[in-house]
Length: 358
Image (cartoon, rainbow, N blue to C red):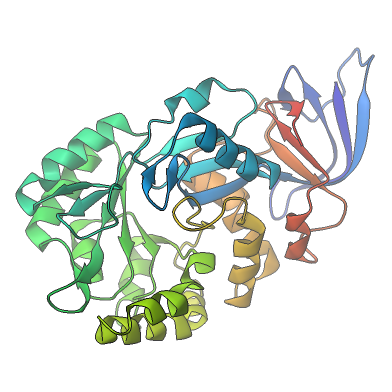
């Protein structure tokens, strides 16, 4: 039996003095018989959330089970116990059977326009097939579908929207009929109005948000997952493409330069913002603490950034936090993460399904 004393951060305003782990679940009541008890002290958060992560994927496509396991363990040891896998070509259902690995909410495989995304990642299709593929992925996934909303158009030499508005409207309606929400990879502004009109639920990266678009996002409650640790790579990407695609390179640099202003303006407008690292493509796993710190740089308060990776993110994804009877998934820290979010980089104890795993 595990007994945790200190500051149990159940929510932004709800702090308890202790919790117990009984039969793998959270209890705030001392059990009648508490014999063999391990007591630890510290500051406790619900298991962290990475809402844009790719277990089972690397820069070249799907990876084998051993690599997927290593990715999931790296995230777990960083305190990430709930992952929204925002697109993967690998079948990672077997992870659900492992008691020592994070829970994963899958968005199925990316759906992209033909030759308009990273090779080996996506279903590459044309607009007439979009609704059918979205419906199929909605049935295969865990309540989410992932579209590629924009990508470089080599003929134009710059970012361009991938789908016409009517195809998006039909596809997103199909997902909603299946009980799934839809998110989309979007760097530029051009793809956002049609996605918004079609009823998109979330946008990944969202570097193209403008002053004109932000009010509509806020009014409709469309969430964003900025993945600022990924946006940090834009200058190197731009340098690599400069000779062949100078307009695209300049565009990527502009998006990078205003990244904090974009997220700050979205936050000020009340747009829901959640933590995602985009791990598993070219980025390493286990970067959740870095992304929380980036959101603070962009203007979120420490409590708001913590919520984007814990209480708020779990509620958005429909998963419990530190609630009576909920699975005991939490992280213990030696210091208060509300005072300095960099504390998240050094978890003292990771508890998953009631077992100490890290």
